Length: 326
Figure 1 (cartoon, rainbow, N blue to C red):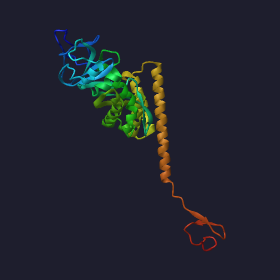
Figure 2 (figure 1 turned 60 degrees about the vertical axis):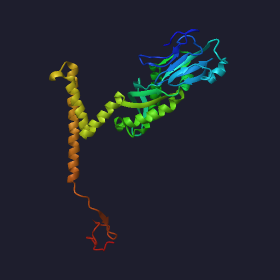
Figure 3 (figure 1 turned 180 degrees about the vertical axis):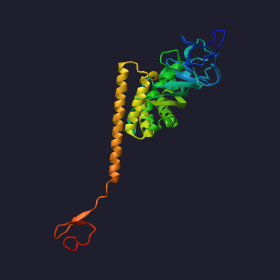
Figure 4 (figure 1 turned 45 degrees about the vertical axis):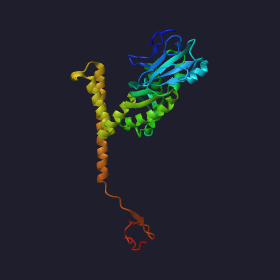
């Protein structure tokens, strides 16, 4: 993390993270840093460094080798009232921040979130995916997230972003036109969700550079109802669908076609009775349809204004008294 230094040796402070899990870290991790004239701070690629004096951000260093001199750090010099020559060391903190993009971070709903669909109303939905996140503003990051800790790793940042994603997910689901279009709308939801989440986490100095929705699935009960509706639409008749379900139930409860006891026999009897009742209902429906088709067409009639006899509506003269019909 750092090199030891004294009044004779002026060291170089730098930060390395071989595991690539630290978003921010203080150097040294415990205590403060002693700065002398000639001390150098090495900021590597995709890094920046903040000088913290008395809990306040004094200066920020970008990529490069920076030698500590009064003219190089005017704000820090004014805050600390340095004298030229650094007769005594300046005690402060140096925070290094990683500007690398942390990729393939996972998010998901631990419990179904409640979403509102135009065609089905409120439906519980589970979802999961991945996102890439980066630290954009070290000042905001330090002021909002660091606190009194000495390091901030990607797991903490991942937890923060995951919480925001799951909280905002229901609001992003408004781009889904219907429940049937749920799986076809993953790209639309991902784009909407990324925009909404970035508006929220911008205050922390971080940004999601890409977000992907891998899956969106309604709850088990809703899936079963949708499967039943699809099966009914394919079969085309509710009674036939019920008969189909009853037959499947009987097949599932009898392995190899052999009953396994009195309960199985009762299920078999109930299934047969259900099937017979459905077939009888189907037969009655078919008979009523035939009778309706065979029934002669209705003839419109009217009454004669003189003798009150019933005549066809199309007749021009009464067949009983010969009066002209109007």
